[in-house]
Image (tube, rainbow, N blue to C red; front, side):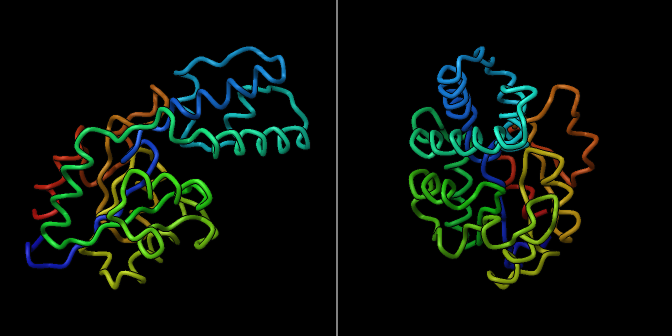
Length: 221
């Protein structure tokens, strides 16, 4: 990759840039307590965060009807909106990498399956330098969530970036599939939200990193 090529680096959010699992765990157990259900272990939540709120509800409230599942999901989302900044932190290397990208005038954005209702609040808090109106892409706009490539296609189009000189960084197999389908170089992080038997090497990403700072060298190779 030529250093002079204008590069877009797109990131997934949860499990890639931010560690939000503890807030999801807290909110889910606020809900189980309210409905007199057993508490859910943190590890059970962490490995399901990338699968979304329906997965969390179905795990915590096994056997619930579709109607009750939908109602419980709305309760969980309301709780999360109120409590999404209590225990969430940025992953190591996030600030350093973003400072580097901005100093090098390399465009960066976030493409997430998290609805804008939550993502915008979190991004404004943790990444105030990002133009959340132009550089945050949520399923509210691209309709089909990852692994569909639509979010990445929209990000490349709106930032006038060539997919072949862009990268997508994610912590889940669906991120890597979305990047591949969009024709973007893919970088898997091995510290994110996945089940223990879901091996990163099976995702066939172009690169794998254990710390976001490692990406500094990759984007210029």
